[in-house]
View 1 (tube, helix red, strand yellow):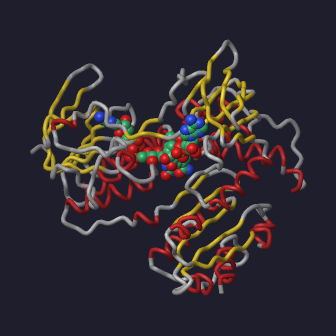
View 2: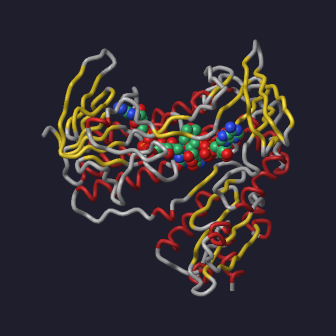
Length: 458
Ligand code: FAD
Ligand code: NAD
């Protein structure tokens, strides 16, 4: 065999797994078809979107709230090419970081499209059509996902776009319709709305942020509405036709036709696993009904030598989930006890305020007939939140009625993503709400709201 492990795909699942494998002494190679390492997350996903969320939040705050601090600046402007240059520099620096990790861990990078010849042989075809073949004891599929398209709506990359283009507009669109009120729609809708775009979000379901605790979703919706985003819920999109300067979108709401027009339409209705061209037929690897690669509890496919992790298998399509699975799968290959607690994958929407959650939602607890108690505390009542002018939102905790074990945490706050980590740790250690309440938190910090929410349970 040429390698102990060949990984197809260098996203957060693939590259983190490769580093772990190399550290465990495996001779490792990664096949990547794109010009850069890092996958969706680094190149067109998590990182560029968070860079733009940061720039647009600064612009919005400077334009609307600096006055409160006694800071007066005249003529605040957004220079979109400069903002994009910064975003590209952030991405570029992180790509270099991944390249460095490959070099320092002696991971071979095989540039080209990977496909299976058999269960232990991968063919790599480069841009010029040149093919090489490499064998490995184990192969890991980490090929990720691509945007879902909607029937009747053709994305042209200019007027009707996916997130790939909405992170790279060269100017602020006057108006944009976003189809889908999930993480992408809410985050990129926020970016452009903060910069001045009139944003309409059309969502098929009666609520936004499906999967989040219902109360958090409602709070976020109100907050985003205050910021100027308009929601059309329970609305089914029929078509979007691009004309000379605008796109006309037709949807059905309450049985009536709704016609919306905008300069851009962002289609953000989910992502689907990417397995095209892998030639899985040559391997015995099976797909689930929803087209994801079928794996057992330790990420092994129906074929012994082939593993799969990340967006291409079941579960939430999140970078940290892909990373955790990659590491644990490699540990399993090495005979170690790698594991991922699927019940505690944090979920964050990086809007203002952010919505971060882990563990059970109230809806899930009811559905599973788990008797629970809740504790809730508002940031409005927190000294630090007032001092830094970030008073929107709350912490809501769910604990078991009988044992007090912490079951779920739902945080709506400016930095909810960071605050959530402490609750996840408590839950990983099967801690109780009382453990959280009795933990001394520094004052004044936003994290005191978590402690106070835990206190309200008792
Ligand atoms: P990917 O990152 O998709 O990587 C797969 C790689 O495999 C790609 O580089 C691809 O080119 C390569 N590949 C595919 N097939 C082949 C082949 N046959 N041969 C060679 N190479 C191949 N998640 C979060 O957790 N937090 C966020 O804030 C967040 N924000 C996001 C924002 C946006 C706009 C988008 C689109 C996604 C976001 N996500 C976020 C989701 C996150 O990007 C994905 O969950 C994550 O990238 C999945 O990692 P992965 O390694 O499974 O696959
Ligand atoms: P999503 O699944 O999160 O949301 C898609 C939304 O589109 C849903 O609310 C769905 O009801 C709606 N929808 C579907 N069909 C529709 C239709 N015909 N008309 C109107 N609405 C329709 O998907 P996404 O926002 O595209 O994100 C894709 C993936 O990327 C997700 O799995 C997400 O977890 C991940 N992501 C994560 C983050 C983050 O962690 N902050 C950020 C961006 C993306």
